[in-house]
Image (cartoon, rainbow, N blue to C red; front, top):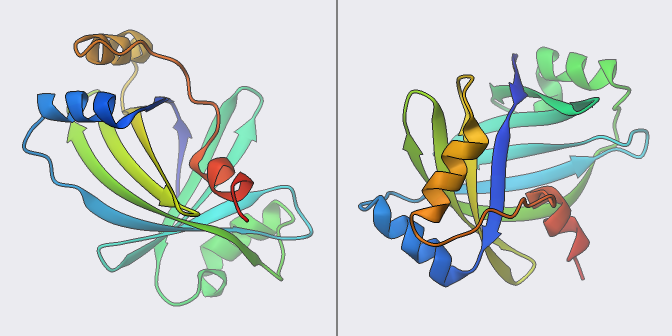
Length: 174
């Protein structure tokens, strides 16, 4: 099971702003990711199963004070059949039954360098579409400044997006 501290900056933008930033990095390849969000009646935690390019990836984000520890593992079959995933869930008192809380499809293009990944996301959920730019740090540096410089190159002011994809998805269910 891969574990890492998640350090990212993200902002929601409108379609015109999204197109301006995407234009800087052409050509882009957008890959489809299907996200399934689950929870359990026994826990406040939720987790995700992402399906992309025929691969299934389990992700659980655990809040540690002001940081987020991300648990991630590719798997086959059903996620709860995987011993490592089951151990992480059980250690956090997350037990079956699990309920599917929402589904969200992301079309993601990624631009990478040795410090970070810039992700351009088109998110589709509950008959809605939104556009999000994420800057996911891989190495220690002033990521906020780097992200603000990328955005300002096309006239976008950084405004933190505090609502996660999960929250946006489940809060807009009919």
